[in-house]
Image (cartoon, rainbow, N blue to C red; front, side, top):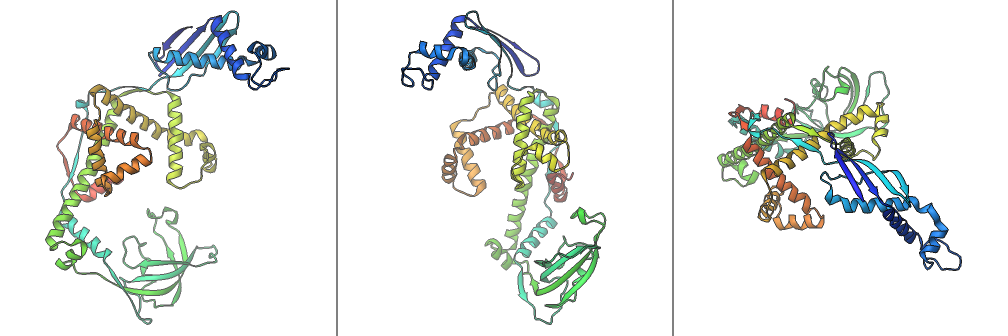
Length: 447
């Protein structure tokens, strides 16, 4: 067997293999041997006939099987010799296949994606840091206060006030349409910030078991429910229970009830530390994402189209599982949206390509910088991961072993180490001070 391999500039390689007649004949003999247990040869039980008798019965009908045997053996023999390895078994085309003269096969196969990285020290990012204010602490305390609200049922003749909690039965219809048959049951907190502007006055003054029908026009625009923006609805509401909501005073007793703090100042100090830790971690991750985005922009990638296609399918199926949608093909999903498959596929392929780029970028950094993960670092990784999940490290390890996820976690710890190296290498401007509100917008992707 002889071969030639030519690397192309698109992460593919042209492979040509020449086989002599002896190799072709050997493949035929193996094909006959494989078929001998099933072929019927007069005078012999299945599997007991001599191979030359099997050959006489089957002739060249095993040609395809012989070719597959020959090519599979060839790739097993060639794999270590190929400078550029295939990422999946090549699909060969037989140019010639003759038992007397030999055979020739050709294939173009995809190789590993390639990346050329920029100098990491030339990458510039702008970290953000949050200064926690007394107002931020007060907001957190008020959130705790609301979680400790006490509800007391009001008397039947009492009216709805602007801070009450209501149990209601309701149904609604868009103007000009019919009501649904059944009422829905729910709770409505008067004064809640998410309530539609101007909706609450329709409920003020109502009493228990009182029913009311009213019109309400949603503002336009209305980001909380864009499909309702600018539309008028007619509501039918019955109040079935009214609760007076009271909140504990924010004082030392309140602090003790929240988490056993000795006094209010201790709870404030804990809250400040927790907020600082949360924002430091989240904003560092965002800064690291910015760094990777800049590195990707400055890198040169060569990625096989087949790999992007496969990853696109994976991204799509993950999307379907995440939103609890029924299993379907991307083509059928596009039909359901009344869109062309190409358009929908492109929307998922962008995310797929980004995932591939990020993965091979990190691999390249690890290769160039000789970053590896030791067994001791894996142990520390489990301890850190377990602490974040609030479980013992041994419990996490047992679950990982049960799920056979050791490789996943080892790779995760390695990538965490790569992240730390990348963050230490890129140039960081002086941190920009921002408020918690600005930080929340950045972290939510709204800015």
